[in-house]
Image (tube, rainbow, N blue to C red; front, side, top):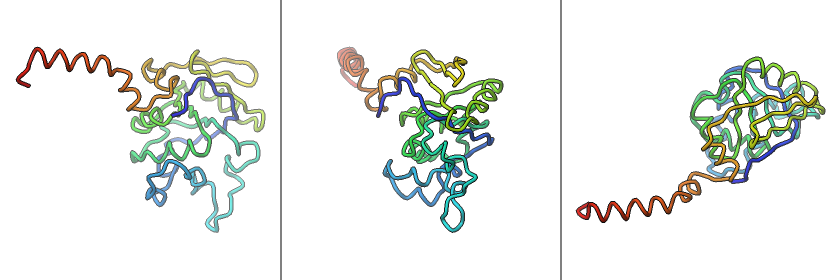
Length: 201
């Protein structure tokens, strides 16, 4: 998993509440267990017309946002079913950070497992960030995980909170297995002590 330290990129505004995982990646794309190749299907029902052509009104189809690596979204992002394909699709498209006032728990957890930083901000902060994101090609934000800050195009800075252990997981680029292996000496020591103290187990 790639480390997440600092990200400077175009932020796409998606001021829709309750964006669920079916909107992020519709059910017909769930047959694959590969984490790659899903970027073209990201938000496909909003991104494409029925004939398969692009919907020019959808934000990620606009020239200024085609390379967006940050999404600024409405409340309750990632609700609905627990499909891990949702962060896979975001990551494959190039999105490394999603900013909202709230996230569904399972989606939030899945982001950390896949190297995506979900940032929770206040409604007032979200409004400022959406205003920044509306600037098209000038909608550049810098998200610094180490300092836990978001800097806007005019230099304004927003601070965000994050669980220290989750922060460290992203900074070091650790998946669940690698994170567990970091504790291997402690686990081995505990197992040895248990075997000595309780040999009947």
